[in-house]
Image 1 (tube, rainbow, N blue to C red):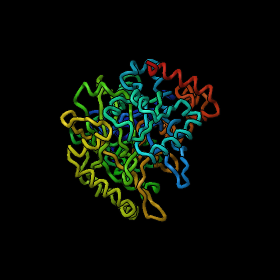
Image 2: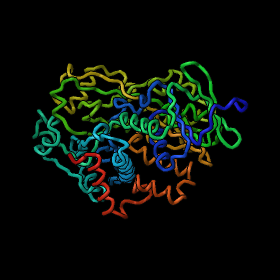
Image 3: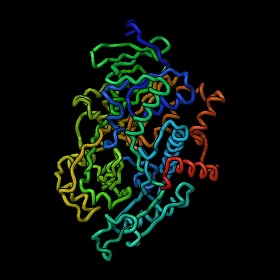
Image 4: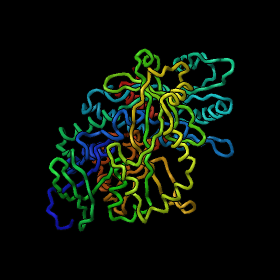
Length: 498
């Protein structure tokens, strides 16, 4: 590749047309408009994979309702450290979005974000005790003081009447928590808006139908090989920095990059499916996101939930997720993706992760074998009188869970996100899934600190970032009054008080 003719030179090339690349590029342009950036997307439109509205849950992940973020420890205590972390990260996203609305870059926040109270809901005595302990621990923390808890069926009926309909109040112990601050987010819409801003306001090229084939070191920068899928022509670009934010496509490309830090990483693809309601009368009876507990052998991302959504200007209702399995790393990927990802440096990680996650394999087999009525019976745990003809199955996004080296197990399967980067920070790649899009702003702050530390050493540039995200480098618990003021202001700008 080193002798190929260079088409163009950039400060940063972003691979992938999703929320991650869009957020990084826009943040950098707002900090320093002179940074020269290009984005390459393999499909003919942006935001078509994990960022697309139907391909994710649309939950603004703040750890209000997601029980897998607050595990119960062996001594019976509840660990809420991850919940506090995720709350802080999503608040940064809201601060950034509010800034964009305030600057008139994003016109109408209701196109992408709505108020949707977040609930955790459980049944059974043991689960009720767990939820009560969780509430007691969380409500002591500054971030979650507004949380409400109730075992009273009449209160729960006010919170989510569709779920409480036709329930035997005398024999069914249950409880729920509620956070009014919860949100529903159309990540596809906000991603499309970001790319429009980049192209129209900042003259940043977004090359659609362009597949990044390889990234090689080229003296002091990176040589990026790209195929124009419309004419099959290959082009070559120089970049000081490369960010690989291509969702499930990130791992195969990272494996081609000559850095030590990539070694041992593998990926396990899991697809998702939703039951989507077709009956408008039923849809109008639910205004919330209600999460419950996953089964004993189910992975964290399988937590069942009944969600209000707003997509293309319409209110929707969905239930799931139901796991599926195929060997693609992207919805528009290849069935050979998984096989091709197995390399000498990660085969022990892959085998170790498989051996220690046999229950996950059994769970996936049980999920794949479900028919429509099996899924409807799962839904009826939430909506007692759900009619099969009112719901249809919709395929959601493809996720690639991280597999890493593990000294004891050989390899471990993880359900978060990892930023893989070389020592200089000139190449960064984002692997993993949830909470993903909700924490895009926080992750991109980390990438900017890794790849462009010189920008933040300049007072003027750092002040620009602080104007966009006031708490990007500050502990909200140390500035509670100021944080509350900013949080309230952001809610007003984003029209979340309506």
